[in-house]
Length: 477
Image 1 (tube, helix red, strand yellow):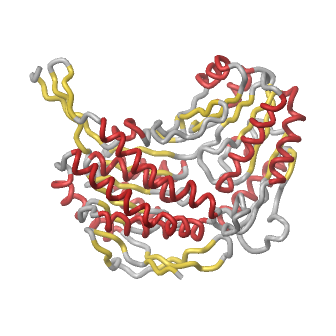
Image 2 (spheres, one colour; image 1 turned 90 degrees about the vertical axis):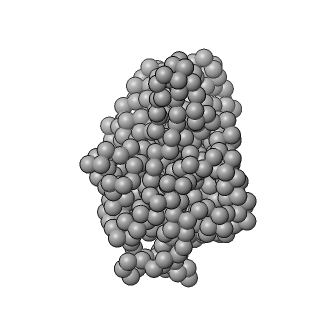
């Protein structure tokens, strides 16, 4: 059992101010896998003090010094990558293949990407008669989720360090093991004391203390829209910068000009993408829009694809999707599916309850609904599980209208034969990232959403800008 009860403040592991403990549950076994301490505002104050003091020197480091630090982190991360992957599987139930190839790997890749961006980034340039300087914003507060634990801190921490900022970080208390290992990586890599500080705790206590702290200049939050609103409200009194990557209900529009083979590929690919990480992805293509004339064809493909998805023990190499993260999450998914049934949606495959043979563990049947109306709760709300809504449309214009008729706007997906048509549809979608014809994620492209999916961007040069203030020195030209 993992016993991670200390916090990392000012370059060392320290005993928390109080001794409140929280058990961490393995979602595949429903057994206690370890424990952490729950911090409070006193711990946050100590971490902010350390980060503020270290900012005085770290903000003045040169580009090469920060490049050397990021490279050192990559070296140490590689050594611990398998260990980090195992921790992610244990803490949140991701299958071992996903933890190794995507979850743990993503944290490493964000640091590598930041190195490339930093090498070419101009922190100072002439603009007419003014010299424009990009300066680190200050102490940054990070609050990260459980669904992609090292991915979500990697895309915040890497640009923060690259730009000369210091950090106070609260990882998710639901999946905290990988955070401890990452802090060990940073320590071994030689991150200066006080530059990165980590405190465990819940959102209402530690999260609120971070977002409301007057000496934190910027907060970056990833999580639910409900929690994001609370973060923004807490931050308002100190006029700090707030960037947020929140929920999603992404539309996957499949156009009518695809051949039979391409249509099968697009529909089946959408189903599999929806079920990666057991559907616990903010950018999951959870609403599939298909031409009304091809609805029956799509339904059959969805059934066949979903029924082939292997649910099972995350440590089993044959498992495609493991359990969802907690009993709370399992209950929420079941409740939303029940509401969908009550509103008249038809269960195409899957449905309520656990898969056969899985009495222990928070396992969910991969489920698809058809005859879904866009105003149903299952079509409007983020379910955060392996649940797909199949919606038919008559024209491109109707598909675009239905796709945009949602509070969220994180991602979108469009598949079609005619690239100009695909581009036209994509350009009309009110979302931050659109995948064209199955395109994969580009870690140098900005990641973020419209509307209730948040504000600000992570990754690439645009992600760097969130950690910088702009100063104009007039009369220098």
